[in-house]
Length: 360
Image (cartoon, rainbow, N blue to C red; front, side):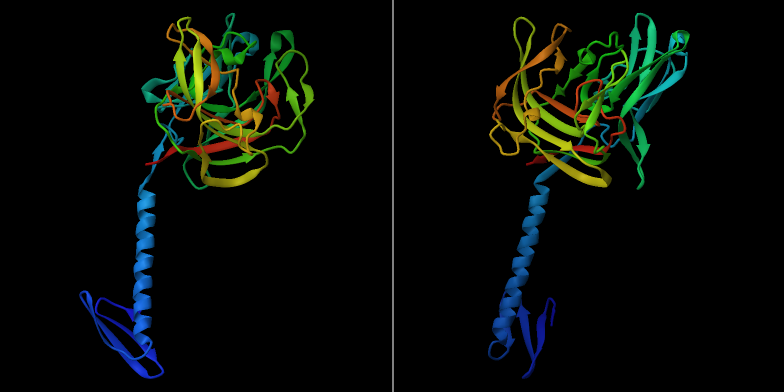
């Protein structure tokens, strides 16, 4: 059987029967059930065409917006010369930012040129002792292009003059916000992180490519550089999350927030080949009653932001409401789920092509 603009033909036991289609009328030289067969195939053809038209409309109704610099193809390279007390070596730090090279010590000012991204890579200047720490950097993908690699690493802080070798555990992190350099104390690493960026959209998902290495070991390190690393019980995992928040500032300068939308994913085992176009759904409103809800998806007291007076202050999350208009978005991609200085060295998360998905 074949279909054309002018005729439908088929072979039956009775011989060849031909039907002609003229505009909207059927003129048929057919017998018995063969006419029904023509109508059946014609109807099925229309149904199939309608299905694909609906599919095309559905696809067109979805909008995918790449995050600025989310293709991981543009990087600023910084060369930091560490203090002589620490050996005077030159260390390399990477920023997901416009292509540039910086050959001098000093703070990097995140948020320039519409760039939403900051990293755990940091320049520290503690009482005049300059130090660089990096666990996030670009890496070539096997199929071409560049991705972002985030490591959980045990970094050595060597003080040759005092014959000291201090160990500090750092998880590689890429997030939406700012890292306010220089770091001037190791007591609270979160005090320099300005979480989130202004945002008013209502996306349905965060989309990205990823692969990961996750240790199966049921123990982790606590290593802050003071004394020997301590072994603790626990299983470290990479994670990705996105929060939509409605924020406001009170008369005392405190920042308050209502959680509008939440997306959260923990990567609990190895994924050694790329998963392209993974979608992390964003759920609006109170998710605490969902069967998949976990406590770690709730409010995080460690997050801070800079208020209108230029002061870093905690973000006080006060409830859930999916009907509010977001004012800020928080995106976190990290190789370790624990707080600072805690985790399992050797875990790795690779990410690429970060986008937001909208259902128009």
